[in-house]
Amino acid sequence: MFFTSLLEAFEVPERRTPAKLSTGGRAALRAAFALATRAEVTVLDEVHLGMDAVTRRAFYDALLADYAAHPRTMILSSHLLEEIQPLVEDVVVLDRGRVVAAGEVDDVRRAHSRGDSLASLTDVLVDLTTPAIAPADPSTGAHR
Image 1: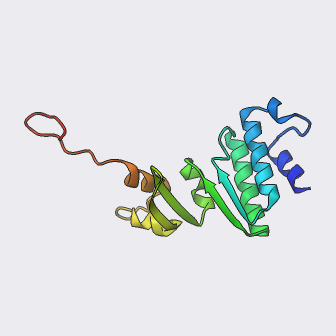
Image 2: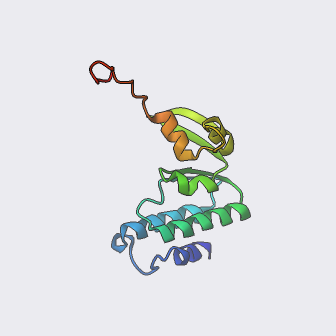
Image 3: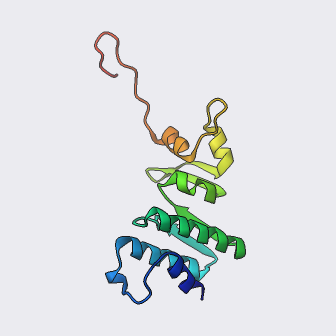
C-alpha cells in the first residue's frame, strides 16, 4: 500500500499514535496522508515544518516520483526556497498576501537576475519583498 510505503520511507512508526510522534513525525505523517490521497489538487502548506533534512529529502523524492507516475496539481508553499526550487515548474511569490510575481520558475528567476548569474528563488523573494533603504544624508549620516 502506498501510504504504508510512505510511512516507511519517512521513518514514521506505524504503531504509534500521532500524539506520541515527534513534531517531525507528525509532519511526515501529514505529508504521507496528503500524497497518498492522490487528490486531483493537493495543497501542501509548509508540510515539511519539523521534518529533519533526511526526511524532507525523502518527502521531496516521493513527491516527484508520485507526481511523475500520477500527474496532478500540487501546490507547495514553503520558505525553504533553495530546497524546493528544483521541484517546482511554476511559482507564485506573495508579499503580505499580495502576488508580486508569478510564472514559470526560470522566467521569474531570469526577470530578477543580474549579470550572467541566474537569480535563485531566494534572490527573487529578497528582491521583491525587501524595502529599499534610502541613502544616508551625507551631512548627518541619518537615513531619509
